[in-house]
Length: 420
Image 1 (spheres, helix red, strand yellow):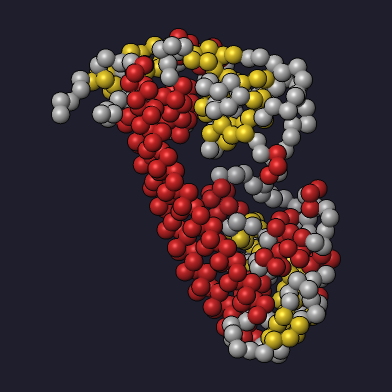
Image 2 (cartoon, rainbow, N blue to C red):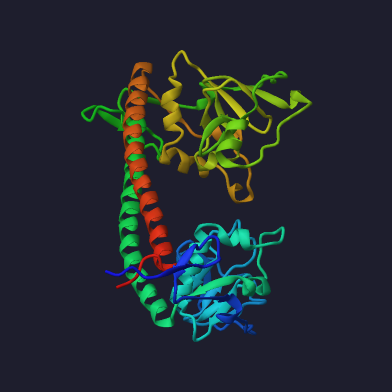
């Protein structure tokens, strides 16, 4: 097979392209079309998502716009772009596949007869994936005007080759997406299995042959006959000690647990306000404490293995360690049945109301011999680590496949590989 002749595109992030491909400003390939909808008449509401252009499913919980002021008609076969705040927008471009209405935050572009919408959807998706669009956005808000977009130099293959590339990538990406969807389904199954393992262990124990009885608590159900249930206020007391200057400042996170503020900022890239004076507003945290924080209704009642200080907005709980194994209750407080029951203790969740000690003591907790608590905790530590390891492997597979997909799009869109 003869190698096609290549030339320098003059575009840094593109590199070389086939010798017979053109380069021209984007304004010669597409133009913005805007037609405002005066009255909503039941048209599909269309948005950009990580999966491209989607029709908002109002029957599945999709939100109807509160106002249609500025909403515009869009048409199948055109491109939909979000040119504002490109650095924080999950996806900036998609191919419109059906007529409908879309937000004024989006821009619709009609392509000329030199450009195929499918090809340029892949082309700009490639730039979006590599954050090239962010670098092209010159102003401080990382946004592009229509004029700025129009001046960007763009590669232009012959139209018949654009169509071939688009059709080929449609087929290959569909195959790749199918594999990713299967892996994602397997991950969801494993996550559900993990939740059921936790719930079963913390409410039923590890002995499948043990005699059971009704706990008297609807959301707990039956428990082993030798277990009891009790109000947690008799077994967890609030720690009200003030922190002293110089203690490491901590953050309680539903996703990462109790970590130092430095660790949290390093992991997330987010900024956390550090107390530089008036240290008496901070509370003491000791290893083995549980921390109630804002997200506790969603499963964020966190177990601390660290010694330090934390915001006075949090509530620290000290477990009665003579009869309680904190690691068991770490799992119990993360069980779906407990989280659901906890959510029912407040009707203020939507308003961002933080959980209080008063909510915590409304829910009884199971009690069993401390040795059995330790056995259950050991089992869940081991079993959930195994499940998490499998999930991590599958997530790594997805990441590898997605990287392959990106490279595939780049190779064909830029002509470094030829559709034959």
